Length: 162
View (cartoon, one colour):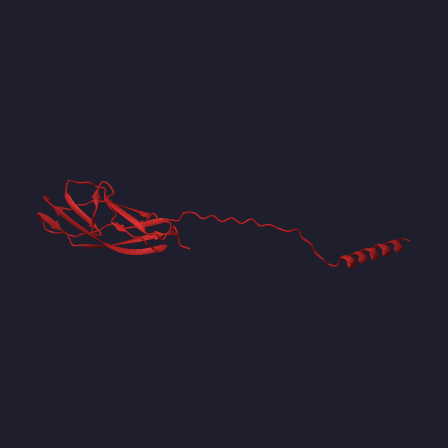
């Protein structure tokens, strides 16, 4: 009787498999995706030093114009351009005229933008501009050093690169 019962169970099990087929089933799945867009960098790299060389003392000491290379790293996504300001941070009594791109650089506070663009490419951009230096009423000999501080900001526009 035991053999008949086992044979019957196997037969029933086989019929159930045949009736249902060989279908594998799985529950539906979900995958959550997250992506964050963050503000990118806007960075200005300027030379460590600009050397104007030497000139003889006179009432108006004018040095030869120098080419200044700078790099803008812009990964903000904006294509609306940049505004670059400069100021002389080491104030002295000398009447100096330090001019970048035709604009006189103010002492102690940021003045007019020395470089302004209304369009740019996203990424790294190598650029050049000019610097001029002259002194009036200078009455002392020797090396005249001063420091220029630079500031860059994006032009205020809504142009975003796609």
